Length: 231
Image (cartoon, rainbow, N blue to C red; front, side, top):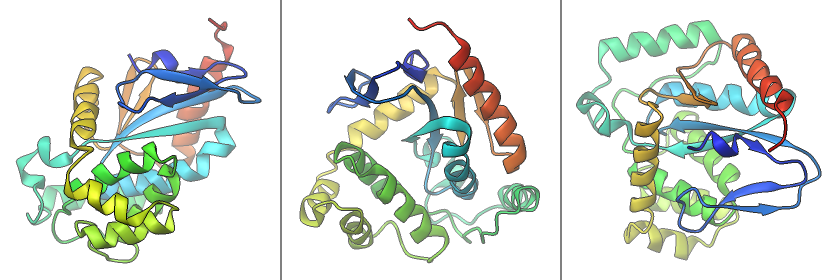
């Protein structure tokens, strides 16, 4: 279970292997870090809100988010790309926006995020995940760009420091399709069925709360993990 390496051992760092199947390699780090897996989709406005809050809390609380993309369309046929955002979904988003204070306009229709999610695994492999991830969320929800367009994603990847030609070629050949499928299988095992879902040890926390609430929840988890004896 991914919760196993939730705590990076003191003096070590965890990284997924090239196959992305949870095999771990360790590299020297000066201090202990806490990993919190988060299952998400770039198509989800709630995941955008979560990204905004998490990036502010990571350094403050002392954890590292491990974002794992799972297509929301595979969970609910209503969220297939091009379908109109229904009244229930829109109301949920607007309530979260009001509660969190994160200003964002939800799209009129569900975004096609398939290529962007495969791109996130390419970015992880290239060790450029964070700038790519940030760039995709900004493009989709702040700049109104079409993240289903390989050329748009190529521009984001290039700005993140990746080889654009290779990146776009890997998207066309769908080289990371199986990696995204493994993310879903993993999420299913952890009962991570909502968007976003944070894995706090053995507990899946679904949804996003205001920043202060998230700070308390995540800080409690981090303190518990740090208080556990080292294996």
